[in-house]
Image (tube, rainbow, N blue to C red; front, side):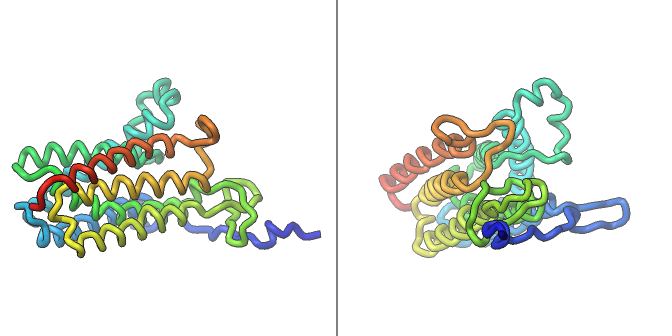
Length: 270
């Protein structure tokens, strides 16, 4: 007898992990996702400055790009080291610098960008929440591309399933699994981007902090939902009551988002 779940599953395409190869220089999909995500988000942020009531210029975002890049890379790596694999890196501290071996955490990158926003806003005399609102609107672009890169790499795959669109990933055994990277790309990336864009078109930028709050709630909720389909990290596994580290790290984001929404709704429009 044929195994129906296996028969119905999709075989993972054998993507080359290297997107572009120029002589000795090899650019991987994940690195390309970071570069394209940052540049596209930067261009989108420059466009959003035209509709904000705050005094933020396109030149400001030209300068902020470097700050954001450092925040994403340094924060993402530090977050992975502290939140997901602390015991290993405590024993091998020098390897925390080996970013080319992989290992980045969104929540760490998020905190890194928050620090960059705070420092940059203070240095330029820009309203903090007005700046964070614009950055929040562009963040789903990078999230979408990052999750697509995860799928191409065959990493961060989902839990075993019998749904007809289950995928057999090359490094995850012979059982079909949820393509959770694509679920998260749709929720954290595309859907959240469209919701924030709709809010911008409805004039949400006039209440500083409203878009930031929406992003925090939207991402946190999407991540919590996505984690129900994603296989937890092998060295961490499930936590209390079958929850995951990603879900626990997302709860404070949702609560902070709710607080920001309340604050934004109470303050006068700019």
